[in-house]
Image (cartoon, rainbow, N blue to C red; front, side, top):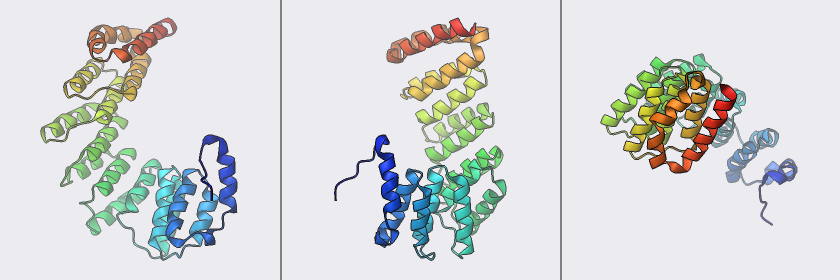
Length: 284
């Protein structure tokens, strides 16, 4: 059997191959992996057909299809399959929970999210970092940042992933100052923020039109040895162009942070200068 190379140009061939493959020919141990493969390429029909031949008492099949649906953005399908799993009498475990919580957050399904929180407490899943981080993210996306923070505070071991979930929730709901305070507090406790943490804060303070805070974050990043990446620059440039052009904010940034950026990140400065020049000619 020759290898089938998956590239954008042959997705039609992939669909044809998927539709012609008989599920009963696939070894039972490979079916969950094949379901994940189908879902990755948005081939929900063959994924569902393959799932339907797996015994419903097999929790691995449910885990595969629910996890794949959530991972690739099919949130309504995720919730539908979760409801069917419960009707089959299967318990919701710590592997399925993060996927369902993710779907709840994106669908703003507060009620189901709270029910799952009760399941977590009843089954004592609080020690599972993946479950608790998913719970934090769910509350944040539903606008319940105080609940998200309480979940975070109750974690025995607070890690960077959980911190980033809380920070993202704060920023999404416009509570940026509290996000920065939490990051500084966690640094004292030994949880060092990464570029994802700082990028979230940069985006938040840029949208909040706080030039001084953006400048401060860039300096702290450099002092901590964290180099801004493409997302960092995209966030700050977009924020400044959208919010500060009328006030000369772009040139404020270039004069106050420019020399520091040139000396440390000169490979990015050329792009920023060109964008500033373009924005000045179009926005003013």
